[in-house]
Image: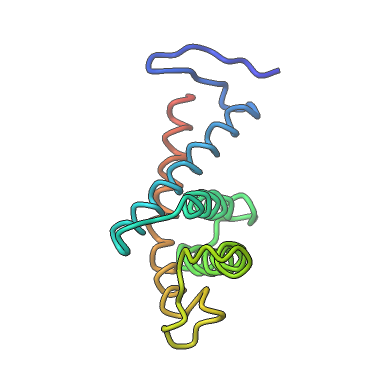
Length: 150
C-alpha cells in the first residue's frame, strides 16, 4: 500500500513505493520534454508537441541505463547509447510524424548521408554530445528525489 504524506513544499510519497518511482519518472519525463522543446526553439525557432513527448521518453530511457546494467556503465558508454537511442527514437517518430502523417515536423533531406530525411550523422553526433548533460541531469534529479525522501 502506498502512503502519501503532506510535506513542506508539496505532496510527498515514501521513497520505496511504486508511487514514488512513478512521480520521479514523470518529473524526469517532463524535464526531458521541456528541455528538448527549448533546444528546438533555440535552434529552429519553433517546436512541435510530439517533440515534447519524444524528449521526455528519451530522458527517461537515458536514466534507465543505470538500472538496466548491473553496474552503471562509463559516462562515454552512456553518452553513446543515449545518442544512438535518441537517433533511433527520432527516426521512428519521424517515420510516423513526417512520412506517414505528412506533418513535416523536420526534414534532413538536404544533409549528407541522411536516412529518409529523418536522421543524419550530424544530428546523431549532436545527440551523443547532448547525452552528457542528459545523463548528468537525470542523475541530479534522481539524487534530489532520494534526498527529499530521506
